Amino acid sequence: MSSLGPASSRNLSAIATMGESLILILNAMGIDGMTAHWEFAYSPKHLKKLSTLLDYPMLPNNCYDEGSKHPVFPTHTVIERAGLKIGVIGIACHIVDKTMPPLLLWHQLYTWE
Image 1: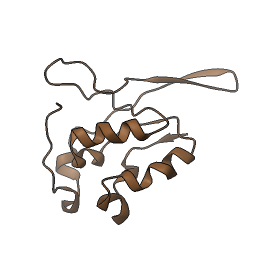
Image 2: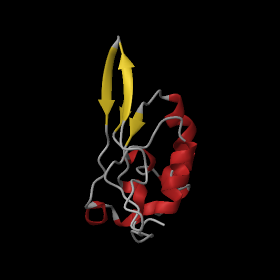
Image 3: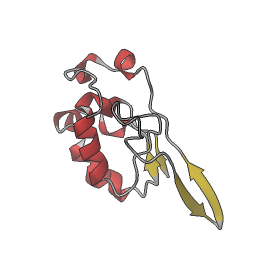
Image 4: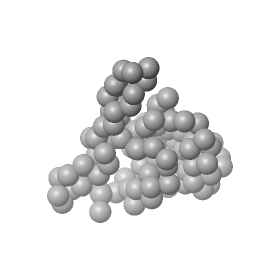
């Protein structure tokens, strides 16, 4: 199973805890990987923290460190189902600051540290 990404940003509990209230639930779901979208509102530093709490990789393969130009997160993962190897990637929305509900915009979009 793959998550579509905005799982940790679309309810009051998730917003109030900056996504942390859903970590146990997301980890229990058997997700193989996810990307990120509205989670960027919590700041890059907090998004990196959230990714360390997950039992699966966060895969927004188009997020790079401004200084090093290296990917911030893993760019892909490979899972196996019924003997078949499947490559999984995630692409983060690059216009999230223009599509995010105002409630989530209490943070500005920061550059990666």
